Image (tube, rainbow, N blue to C red; front, top):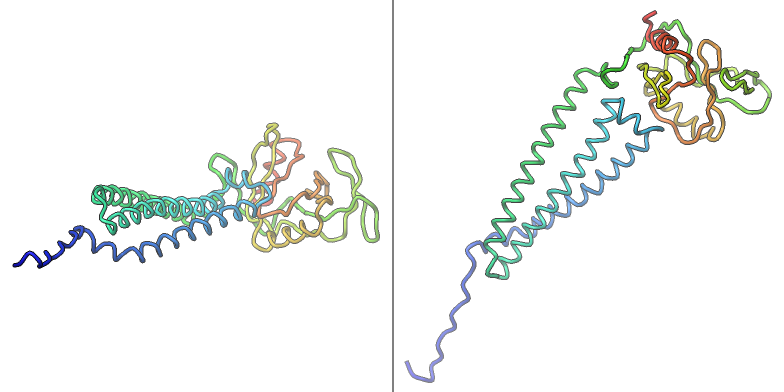
Length: 281
């Protein structure tokens, strides 16, 4: 070998984990899917909350309502956790591609974090699955434990009716008095809801410790009240029990599948209403 001959260049050593860099495109794709899943689950979570007039009553008293809301929330959290873990994993692969000195250490740390995130998400999926199985196994116990619960019956003894009321007289309207306030309202001939639209009735207490009855509507009743509450917004919704107007609140927002009746004098009266809706009297 002469002095004029050039010494061949020594190739830069290839990192031992360099083949893993080939998985970067797939990792980027999964990361984007997780971000999209997080955004979609968050949107569904917010929509589910707005489906009810009083979502916090839904979260407190309805097992199926809690399941629906928290399922979306759990999916959003799982997608966010996995996306964060995968982002760390992708960053470690990029360090391997650039052959940085700390690439191996960063890769193992990111891998451990990713496996832990997968384990937590698996536990979350199992827990939500067991919860869903329990709710669907006993649909009659949809409302919270500790409250008095009744199932629907086609032949109730007490008639509960909902009317779209008016504050002024008109053709075909009948004047009625609200029991508590004594105010006059005017009702049409036909109610929009009656006992046949209710699935369950629950007796409870409001914040003032006065008795209330919360009723869950069936699919037909829910569709009726949602459309009617949108069209009749800012006008009274009269609730009659055995022909007596016990309350007539103004509709402030679109209503959902659960309606609470207040203005009941005693707990015994509330229980009688709920039992009668259930056909237990």
